[in-house]
Length: 480
Image 1 (cartoon, helix red, strand yellow):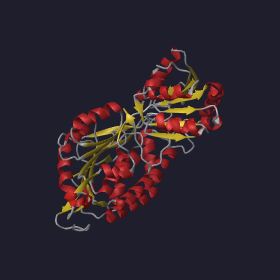
Image 2 (cartoon, helix red, strand yellow; image 1 turned 135 degrees about the vertical axis):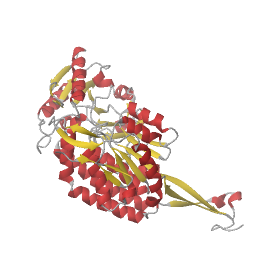
Image 3 (spheres, helix red, strand yellow; image 1 turned 45 degrees about the horizontal axis):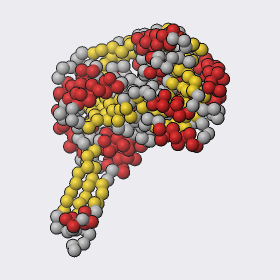
Image 4 (cartoon, one colour; image 1 turned 30 degrees about the horizontal axis):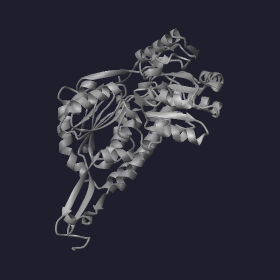
Protein backbone atom coordinates (compact mmCIF):
# COMPACT_ATOMS: atom_id res chain seq x y z
CA UNK A 1 0.00 0.00 0.00
CA UNK A 2 1.44 3.36 -1.03
CA UNK A 3 1.75 6.10 1.56
CA UNK A 4 -0.19 9.22 0.64
CA UNK A 5 1.95 12.21 -0.30
CA UNK A 6 0.71 14.86 2.15
CA UNK A 7 -0.13 18.49 1.66
CA UNK A 8 1.56 21.09 3.85
CA UNK A 9 -1.07 23.52 5.04
CA UNK A 10 -0.90 26.01 7.88
CA UNK A 11 2.33 24.52 9.23
CA UNK A 12 1.05 20.91 9.28
CA UNK A 13 1.56 17.96 6.97
CA UNK A 14 -1.94 16.64 6.15
CA UNK A 15 -2.65 13.23 4.63
CA UNK A 16 -6.33 12.85 5.48
CA UNK A 17 -8.82 13.78 2.80
CA UNK A 18 -9.35 13.15 -0.90
CA UNK A 19 -6.46 11.59 -2.81
CA UNK A 20 -5.52 10.97 -6.43
CA UNK A 21 -3.21 8.37 -7.91
CA UNK A 22 -0.38 9.07 -10.32
CA UNK A 23 0.07 6.36 -12.95
CA UNK A 24 3.70 6.08 -14.00
CA UNK A 25 3.89 6.57 -17.78
CA UNK A 26 6.47 3.81 -18.24
CA UNK A 27 5.39 1.31 -15.58
CA UNK A 28 1.66 1.95 -16.26
CA UNK A 29 1.04 1.31 -12.57
CA UNK A 30 0.28 3.56 -9.61
CA UNK A 31 3.58 5.09 -8.49
CA UNK A 32 2.35 7.77 -6.05
CA UNK A 33 -0.81 8.95 -4.36
CA UNK A 34 -1.31 12.56 -3.28
CA UNK A 35 -3.70 14.26 -0.91
CA UNK A 36 -5.43 16.76 -3.19
CA UNK A 37 -6.72 20.13 -2.10
CA UNK A 38 -10.26 20.43 -0.86
CA UNK A 39 -12.59 23.31 -1.74
CA UNK A 40 -11.43 25.50 1.16
CA UNK A 41 -7.71 24.73 1.08
CA UNK A 42 -6.65 27.51 -1.30
CA UNK A 43 -8.36 30.11 0.88
CA UNK A 44 -6.80 28.64 4.05
CA UNK A 45 -3.35 28.54 2.47
CA UNK A 46 -3.58 32.20 1.47
CA UNK A 47 -4.73 33.26 4.93
CA UNK A 48 -2.00 31.27 6.64
CA UNK A 49 0.62 32.67 4.26
CA UNK A 50 -0.41 36.22 5.05
CA UNK A 51 -0.09 35.47 8.77
CA UNK A 52 3.29 33.75 8.26
CA UNK A 53 4.84 36.48 6.10
CA UNK A 54 6.22 38.60 8.92
CA UNK A 55 7.88 35.58 10.57
CA UNK A 56 9.93 34.87 7.45
CA UNK A 57 10.64 38.54 6.72
CA UNK A 58 12.29 38.86 10.14
CA UNK A 59 14.95 36.28 9.25
CA UNK A 60 18.25 37.99 8.46
CA UNK A 61 19.60 37.43 4.94
CA UNK A 62 22.56 35.54 6.41
CA UNK A 63 20.17 33.18 8.20
CA UNK A 64 18.23 32.53 5.01
CA UNK A 65 21.46 32.02 3.09
CA UNK A 66 22.78 29.46 5.59
CA UNK A 67 19.54 27.46 5.30
CA UNK A 68 19.73 27.51 1.51
CA UNK A 69 23.34 26.36 1.60
CA UNK A 70 22.30 23.41 3.77
CA UNK A 71 19.45 22.65 1.36
CA UNK A 72 22.04 22.48 -1.44
CA UNK A 73 24.01 19.89 0.54
CA UNK A 74 20.87 17.85 1.21
CA UNK A 75 19.97 17.91 -2.49
CA UNK A 76 23.30 16.30 -3.29
CA UNK A 77 22.87 13.73 -0.53
CA UNK A 78 19.35 12.76 -1.66
CA UNK A 79 20.19 12.91 -5.36
CA UNK A 80 19.59 9.26 -6.19
CA UNK A 81 16.38 8.93 -4.18
CA UNK A 82 14.71 11.96 -5.77
CA UNK A 83 15.98 11.01 -9.24
CA UNK A 84 14.23 7.66 -8.80
CA UNK A 85 10.99 9.44 -7.92
CA UNK A 86 11.34 11.53 -11.10
CA UNK A 87 11.84 8.39 -13.17
CA UNK A 88 8.78 6.70 -11.66
CA UNK A 89 6.39 9.66 -11.78
CA UNK A 90 7.47 11.08 -15.14
CA UNK A 91 9.38 8.44 -17.09
CA UNK A 92 12.48 10.66 -17.19
CA UNK A 93 15.71 8.61 -17.35
CA UNK A 94 17.32 8.33 -13.95
CA UNK A 95 20.62 9.70 -15.25
CA UNK A 96 18.80 12.86 -16.35
CA UNK A 97 17.06 12.99 -12.98
CA UNK A 98 20.42 12.87 -11.27
CA UNK A 99 21.55 15.73 -13.47
CA UNK A 100 18.45 17.67 -12.46
CA UNK A 101 19.28 17.17 -8.76
CA UNK A 102 22.81 18.40 -9.41
CA UNK A 103 21.18 21.54 -10.75
CA UNK A 104 18.89 21.74 -7.70
CA UNK A 105 21.97 21.79 -5.50
CA UNK A 106 23.51 24.54 -7.64
CA UNK A 107 20.26 26.52 -7.66
CA UNK A 108 19.91 26.52 -3.89
CA UNK A 109 23.56 27.53 -3.55
CA UNK A 110 23.08 30.43 -5.99
CA UNK A 111 19.93 31.48 -4.11
CA UNK A 112 22.02 31.57 -0.93
CA UNK A 113 24.53 33.86 -2.62
CA UNK A 114 21.72 36.13 -3.84
CA UNK A 115 20.28 36.35 -0.32
CA UNK A 116 23.63 37.71 0.87
CA UNK A 117 23.60 40.38 -1.86
CA UNK A 118 20.24 41.92 -0.97
CA UNK A 119 20.75 45.56 -0.02
CA UNK A 120 19.78 49.05 -1.08
CA UNK A 121 21.04 52.47 -2.11
CA UNK A 122 21.83 55.92 -0.81
CA UNK A 123 20.13 58.24 -3.29
CA UNK A 124 21.74 61.47 -4.57
CA UNK A 125 18.86 63.66 -3.47
CA UNK A 126 21.05 66.67 -2.77
CA UNK A 127 21.82 66.96 -6.48
CA UNK A 128 18.51 68.84 -6.87
CA UNK A 129 17.60 72.00 -4.99
CA UNK A 130 14.52 70.58 -3.25
CA UNK A 131 16.61 67.71 -1.96
CA UNK A 132 19.14 69.89 -0.14
CA UNK A 133 19.17 69.14 3.58
CA UNK A 134 17.62 65.68 3.17
CA UNK A 135 18.85 62.10 2.93
CA UNK A 136 17.06 59.28 1.07
CA UNK A 137 17.74 55.55 1.36
CA UNK A 138 16.21 52.45 -0.21
CA UNK A 139 16.27 48.75 0.50
CA UNK A 140 14.68 45.68 -1.08
CA UNK A 141 11.95 44.35 1.23
CA UNK A 142 10.15 41.00 0.90
CA UNK A 143 7.00 41.15 -1.22
CA UNK A 144 5.23 39.05 1.42
CA UNK A 145 3.42 36.05 -0.09
CA UNK A 146 4.68 34.36 -3.24
CA UNK A 147 2.86 31.72 -5.27
CA UNK A 148 4.95 29.16 -7.17
CA UNK A 149 3.15 27.11 -9.83
CA UNK A 150 5.50 24.49 -11.24
CA UNK A 151 5.34 22.22 -14.32
CA UNK A 152 5.91 18.48 -14.63
CA UNK A 153 8.87 18.50 -16.99
CA UNK A 154 11.55 19.69 -14.52
CA UNK A 155 9.63 19.52 -11.24
CA UNK A 156 12.63 19.52 -8.93
CA UNK A 157 14.85 22.24 -10.37
CA UNK A 158 12.10 24.64 -11.40
CA UNK A 159 10.62 24.38 -7.92
CA UNK A 160 14.08 25.00 -6.46
CA UNK A 161 14.31 28.20 -8.53
CA UNK A 162 10.96 29.52 -7.41
CA UNK A 163 11.02 28.39 -3.78
CA UNK A 164 14.71 29.11 -3.27
CA UNK A 165 14.58 32.63 -4.69
CA UNK A 166 11.38 33.43 -2.79
CA UNK A 167 12.89 32.28 0.50
CA UNK A 168 16.13 34.13 -0.27
CA UNK A 169 14.03 37.28 -0.68
CA UNK A 170 12.38 36.74 2.72
CA UNK A 171 8.92 35.64 1.55
CA UNK A 172 6.61 32.85 2.56
CA UNK A 173 5.68 30.69 -0.43
CA UNK A 174 2.64 28.72 -1.49
CA UNK A 175 3.62 25.89 -3.85
CA UNK A 176 1.04 24.50 -6.24
CA UNK A 177 2.61 21.22 -7.38
CA UNK A 178 2.02 19.62 -10.80
CA UNK A 179 -0.40 16.68 -10.53
CA UNK A 180 2.09 14.50 -12.39
CA UNK A 181 4.87 14.96 -9.80
CA UNK A 182 3.48 15.15 -6.24
CA UNK A 183 6.19 13.03 -4.63
CA UNK A 184 9.02 14.95 -6.29
CA UNK A 185 7.50 18.28 -5.26
CA UNK A 186 7.10 17.18 -1.64
CA UNK A 187 10.70 15.94 -1.61
CA UNK A 188 12.04 19.34 -2.74
CA UNK A 189 9.93 21.18 -0.16
CA UNK A 190 11.33 18.80 2.45
CA UNK A 191 14.88 19.75 1.44
CA UNK A 192 14.29 23.34 2.52
CA UNK A 193 12.49 22.44 5.74
CA UNK A 194 15.02 19.79 6.72
CA UNK A 195 17.75 22.36 6.12
CA UNK A 196 16.26 24.47 8.89
CA UNK A 197 13.68 26.73 7.26
CA UNK A 198 10.76 27.51 9.57
CA UNK A 199 7.64 25.60 8.62
CA UNK A 200 6.00 28.99 8.04
CA UNK A 201 8.26 29.42 4.99
CA UNK A 202 6.23 27.19 2.68
CA UNK A 203 2.89 25.54 2.07
CA UNK A 204 2.30 22.79 -0.49
CA UNK A 205 -0.97 21.98 -2.21
CA UNK A 206 -1.68 19.24 -4.75
CA UNK A 207 -4.44 19.38 -7.31
CA UNK A 208 -5.48 20.60 -10.72
CA UNK A 209 -6.08 23.90 -12.43
CA UNK A 210 -8.95 24.93 -10.20
CA UNK A 211 -6.61 25.00 -7.19
CA UNK A 212 -4.10 27.12 -9.08
CA UNK A 213 -6.81 29.52 -10.25
CA UNK A 214 -8.10 30.02 -6.71
CA UNK A 215 -4.59 30.71 -5.43
CA UNK A 216 -3.87 33.16 -8.27
CA UNK A 217 -6.99 35.13 -7.40
CA UNK A 218 -6.22 35.27 -3.66
CA UNK A 219 -5.67 38.91 -2.63
CA UNK A 220 -3.02 37.85 -0.08
CA UNK A 221 -0.67 36.75 -2.88
CA UNK A 222 1.74 39.50 -3.93
CA UNK A 223 3.74 37.82 -6.69
CA UNK A 224 3.20 34.76 -8.89
CA UNK A 225 5.87 32.74 -10.66
CA UNK A 226 4.39 30.34 -13.21
CA UNK A 227 6.05 27.96 -15.65
CA UNK A 228 3.86 26.16 -18.16
CA UNK A 229 1.99 26.50 -21.42
CA UNK A 230 1.12 29.81 -23.03
CA UNK A 231 -2.61 29.13 -22.78
CA UNK A 232 -2.41 28.35 -19.08
CA UNK A 233 -0.19 31.39 -18.56
CA UNK A 234 -2.91 33.57 -20.05
CA UNK A 235 -5.41 32.02 -17.62
CA UNK A 236 -3.02 32.69 -14.73
CA UNK A 237 -2.74 36.35 -15.74
CA UNK A 238 -6.51 36.71 -15.99
CA UNK A 239 -7.09 35.10 -12.59
CA UNK A 240 -4.27 37.07 -10.94
CA UNK A 241 -5.41 40.54 -11.88
CA UNK A 242 -3.14 43.34 -10.65
CA UNK A 243 -0.33 41.20 -9.24
CA UNK A 244 3.32 40.97 -10.13
CA UNK A 245 3.84 38.08 -12.56
CA UNK A 246 6.82 36.09 -13.79
CA UNK A 247 5.63 33.87 -16.66
CA UNK A 248 7.93 31.36 -18.34
CA UNK A 249 5.79 29.85 -21.08
CA UNK A 250 6.13 27.79 -24.23
CA UNK A 251 8.51 27.64 -27.15
CA UNK A 252 9.29 25.91 -30.43
CA UNK A 253 12.99 26.61 -30.38
CA UNK A 254 15.08 26.93 -33.53
CA UNK A 255 18.72 25.98 -34.01
CA UNK A 256 20.58 27.24 -37.09
CA UNK A 257 23.49 25.29 -38.59
CA UNK A 258 25.56 27.38 -41.02
CA UNK A 259 27.82 26.18 -43.83
CA UNK A 260 30.98 26.82 -41.84
CA UNK A 261 29.81 24.79 -38.82
CA UNK A 262 31.23 21.52 -37.59
CA UNK A 263 28.16 19.57 -38.66
CA UNK A 264 29.22 16.37 -36.92
CA UNK A 265 29.38 18.26 -33.64
CA UNK A 266 26.09 20.01 -34.38
CA UNK A 267 24.36 16.71 -35.14
CA UNK A 268 25.70 15.10 -31.98
CA UNK A 269 24.65 18.04 -29.79
CA UNK A 270 21.19 18.27 -31.37
CA UNK A 271 20.64 14.54 -30.93
CA UNK A 272 21.58 14.68 -27.27
CA UNK A 273 19.58 17.83 -26.49
CA UNK A 274 16.60 17.25 -28.76
CA UNK A 275 15.42 14.19 -26.86
CA UNK A 276 16.44 14.91 -23.28
CA UNK A 277 13.35 14.24 -21.17
CA UNK A 278 11.73 13.03 -24.42
CA UNK A 279 11.86 16.58 -25.75
CA UNK A 280 9.57 17.84 -22.99
CA UNK A 281 11.33 21.14 -22.43
CA UNK A 282 10.38 24.63 -23.54
CA UNK A 283 13.87 25.06 -25.05
CA UNK A 284 14.21 21.56 -26.46
CA UNK A 285 15.54 21.41 -30.02
CA UNK A 286 12.50 21.42 -32.30
CA UNK A 287 13.38 23.20 -35.56
CA UNK A 288 16.86 22.78 -37.04
CA UNK A 289 17.60 24.97 -40.06
CA UNK A 290 20.67 23.76 -41.98
CA UNK A 291 22.50 25.50 -44.84
CA UNK A 292 21.36 23.73 -48.01
CA UNK A 293 24.85 22.67 -49.09
CA UNK A 294 25.24 20.78 -45.77
CA UNK A 295 21.62 19.65 -45.39
CA UNK A 296 21.81 16.08 -46.72
CA UNK A 297 24.98 15.28 -44.79
CA UNK A 298 23.54 16.76 -41.61
CA UNK A 299 20.34 14.72 -41.89
CA UNK A 300 22.38 11.54 -42.29
CA UNK A 301 24.57 12.39 -39.30
CA UNK A 302 21.61 13.37 -37.10
CA UNK A 303 19.70 10.22 -38.07
CA UNK A 304 22.64 8.05 -37.07
CA UNK A 305 23.12 9.86 -33.76
CA UNK A 306 19.42 9.63 -32.89
CA UNK A 307 19.27 5.99 -33.90
CA UNK A 308 22.04 5.24 -31.42
CA UNK A 309 20.10 6.62 -28.44
CA UNK A 310 19.02 3.93 -25.99
CA UNK A 311 15.26 3.93 -25.40
CA UNK A 312 13.73 2.06 -22.49
CA UNK A 313 13.27 1.76 -18.76
CA UNK A 314 13.93 5.15 -17.14
CA UNK A 315 15.31 3.38 -14.06
CA UNK A 316 18.10 1.85 -16.16
CA UNK A 317 21.16 4.12 -15.83
CA UNK A 318 22.04 3.43 -19.49
CA UNK A 319 18.71 4.73 -20.84
CA UNK A 320 18.88 7.95 -22.86
CA UNK A 321 15.17 8.34 -23.65
CA UNK A 322 12.35 7.15 -21.42
CA UNK A 323 8.65 7.79 -21.79
CA UNK A 324 6.68 10.97 -22.25
CA UNK A 325 4.38 12.25 -19.52
CA UNK A 326 1.42 10.17 -20.71
CA UNK A 327 0.13 8.15 -23.65
CA UNK A 328 -2.03 10.99 -24.97
CA UNK A 329 1.01 13.25 -25.34
CA UNK A 330 2.98 10.59 -27.22
CA UNK A 331 0.03 9.89 -29.51
CA UNK A 332 -0.36 13.58 -30.31
CA UNK A 333 3.27 13.98 -31.34
CA UNK A 334 3.15 10.89 -33.53
CA UNK A 335 -0.04 12.15 -35.19
CA UNK A 336 1.72 15.42 -36.02
CA UNK A 337 4.64 13.50 -37.54
CA UNK A 338 2.32 11.41 -39.70
CA UNK A 339 0.52 14.56 -40.86
CA UNK A 340 3.87 16.12 -41.86
CA UNK A 341 4.68 13.03 -43.94
CA UNK A 342 1.33 13.47 -45.65
CA UNK A 343 2.54 16.94 -46.64
CA UNK A 344 5.75 15.64 -48.21
CA UNK A 345 8.13 15.23 -45.26
CA UNK A 346 10.01 12.03 -44.50
CA UNK A 347 10.71 10.32 -41.19
CA UNK A 348 14.34 9.23 -41.20
CA UNK A 349 14.28 7.48 -37.82
CA UNK A 350 11.65 6.71 -35.22
CA UNK A 351 7.99 7.30 -35.96
CA UNK A 352 6.69 4.57 -33.66
CA UNK A 353 5.46 4.43 -30.10
CA UNK A 354 4.74 1.96 -27.32
CA UNK A 355 2.23 3.51 -24.95
CA UNK A 356 3.74 6.73 -23.62
CA UNK A 357 7.17 5.93 -25.08
CA UNK A 358 7.74 7.61 -28.45
CA UNK A 359 10.79 6.43 -30.35
CA UNK A 360 13.04 9.45 -30.95
CA UNK A 361 11.85 10.78 -34.29
CA UNK A 362 13.46 12.95 -36.99
CA UNK A 363 11.18 14.60 -39.56
CA UNK A 364 13.15 15.94 -42.55
CA UNK A 365 11.88 18.63 -44.91
CA UNK A 366 8.40 19.14 -43.47
CA UNK A 367 6.10 21.78 -44.95
CA UNK A 368 6.73 25.19 -43.42
CA UNK A 369 3.16 25.29 -42.11
CA UNK A 370 3.17 21.80 -40.57
CA UNK A 371 2.24 21.50 -36.88
CA UNK A 372 5.69 20.03 -36.14
CA UNK A 373 7.17 23.35 -37.32
CA UNK A 374 4.71 26.00 -36.22
CA UNK A 375 3.43 24.62 -32.90
CA UNK A 376 5.19 23.56 -29.72
CA UNK A 377 5.86 19.83 -30.12
CA UNK A 378 7.00 19.22 -26.53
CA UNK A 379 7.91 15.66 -27.38
CA UNK A 380 10.55 13.32 -28.76
CA UNK A 381 10.58 14.77 -32.27
CA UNK A 382 12.94 17.10 -34.12
CA UNK A 383 12.42 18.66 -37.55
CA UNK A 384 15.20 19.51 -40.04
CA UNK A 385 14.76 22.06 -42.82
CA UNK A 386 17.19 23.59 -45.38
CA UNK A 387 17.86 27.31 -45.77
CA UNK A 388 19.59 29.33 -48.50
CA UNK A 389 20.04 32.81 -47.04
CA UNK A 390 21.04 33.77 -43.48
CA UNK A 391 18.92 36.92 -43.37
CA UNK A 392 15.92 34.95 -44.55
CA UNK A 393 16.35 32.16 -42.02
CA UNK A 394 16.45 34.70 -39.20
CA UNK A 395 13.11 36.03 -40.43
CA UNK A 396 11.77 32.48 -40.64
CA UNK A 397 12.77 31.83 -37.03
CA UNK A 398 11.10 35.08 -35.98
CA UNK A 399 7.86 34.00 -37.63
CA UNK A 400 7.06 31.94 -34.55
CA UNK A 401 4.66 33.28 -31.91
CA UNK A 402 7.23 32.06 -29.37
CA UNK A 403 10.63 33.53 -28.56
CA UNK A 404 12.39 31.75 -25.73
CA UNK A 405 15.82 30.61 -26.85
CA UNK A 406 17.72 29.72 -30.05
CA UNK A 407 20.90 27.92 -31.03
CA UNK A 408 23.48 28.82 -33.68
CA UNK A 409 26.39 26.81 -35.05
CA UNK A 410 28.89 29.05 -36.87
CA UNK A 411 32.40 30.48 -36.58
CA UNK A 412 31.39 33.77 -38.20
CA UNK A 413 31.43 36.55 -35.58
CA UNK A 414 29.37 38.83 -37.82
CA UNK A 415 26.59 36.27 -38.04
CA UNK A 416 26.74 35.68 -34.29
CA UNK A 417 26.19 39.34 -33.49
CA UNK A 418 23.56 39.73 -36.20
CA UNK A 419 21.60 36.77 -34.82
CA UNK A 420 21.94 38.05 -31.26
CA UNK A 421 20.64 41.43 -32.42
CA UNK A 422 17.86 40.31 -34.73
CA UNK A 423 16.47 37.04 -33.37
CA UNK A 424 13.34 37.67 -31.30
CA UNK A 425 14.35 35.45 -28.38
CA UNK A 426 15.41 35.85 -24.78
CA UNK A 427 18.68 33.99 -25.25
CA UNK A 428 21.04 32.75 -27.98
CA UNK A 429 23.39 29.77 -27.56
CA UNK A 430 26.36 29.84 -29.94
CA UNK A 431 27.96 26.54 -30.98
CA UNK A 432 25.29 24.79 -28.98
CA UNK A 433 21.64 24.01 -29.47
CA UNK A 434 18.73 25.95 -28.03
CA UNK A 435 18.58 23.46 -25.16
CA UNK A 436 21.29 24.74 -22.83
CA UNK A 437 20.88 26.64 -19.60
CA UNK A 438 23.05 27.84 -16.74
CA UNK A 439 20.92 28.22 -13.64
CA UNK A 440 22.64 31.40 -12.44
CA UNK A 441 22.20 33.20 -15.80
CA UNK A 442 19.01 35.14 -16.66
CA UNK A 443 16.54 32.91 -18.52
CA UNK A 444 13.25 33.84 -20.12
CA UNK A 445 11.54 34.79 -23.33
CA UNK A 446 9.63 37.32 -25.38
CA UNK A 447 6.32 37.24 -27.25
CA UNK A 448 4.19 34.24 -26.19
CA UNK A 449 7.13 32.72 -24.35
CA UNK A 450 6.36 34.99 -21.41
CA UNK A 451 8.10 37.75 -19.51
CA UNK A 452 10.39 38.10 -16.55
CA UNK A 453 13.65 36.23 -16.08
CA UNK A 454 13.83 33.00 -14.13
CA UNK A 455 17.18 32.75 -12.39
CA UNK A 456 17.85 33.54 -8.74
CA UNK A 457 19.19 37.07 -9.22
CA UNK A 458 16.34 38.51 -11.31
CA UNK A 459 13.81 36.46 -9.37
CA UNK A 460 14.89 37.98 -6.06
CA UNK A 461 14.17 41.37 -7.61
CA UNK A 462 10.72 40.16 -8.67
CA UNK A 463 10.10 38.76 -5.20
CA UNK A 464 11.01 42.01 -3.42
CA UNK A 465 9.76 45.60 -3.39
CA UNK A 466 11.81 48.78 -3.14
CA UNK A 467 11.07 50.71 0.05
CA UNK A 468 12.24 54.30 0.40
CA UNK A 469 13.17 56.19 3.56
CA UNK A 470 13.47 60.02 3.45
CA UNK A 471 15.11 61.78 6.37
CA UNK A 472 14.04 65.43 6.28
CA UNK A 473 16.36 67.94 7.84
CA UNK A 474 19.06 65.26 8.18
CA UNK A 475 21.66 65.33 5.44
CA UNK A 476 24.87 63.50 4.75
CA UNK A 477 25.45 65.77 1.75
CA UNK A 478 25.82 69.21 3.27
CA UNK A 479 23.29 71.88 4.18
CA UNK A 480 23.90 74.67 1.63
